[in-house]
Length: 110
Image (cartoon, rainbow, N blue to C red):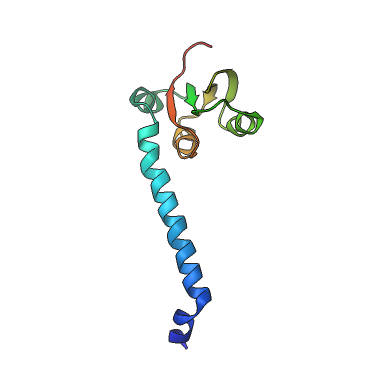
């Protein structure tokens, strides 16, 4: 019975999909470390609220702006950079895992 399940096409597809999802999540986790600027990483340990510049690598559209509002308040957009205020330190890691976010820098005054 178990051999028949293991040899089935459905089992192989499920295992392949699980492997792809695991690989993608691993990639996002490893990449997130390089997306966060060192100054932001230090600031997350000491500050209860952060001001960040999120570089996307392309001009953000309405979708990107609305999506990033779940992490903080949008205070402006300059080219391909969104300025976020009031970002919780625990949200920085989740923000860095978004595949279209290229860099997270300490925020300046917009």
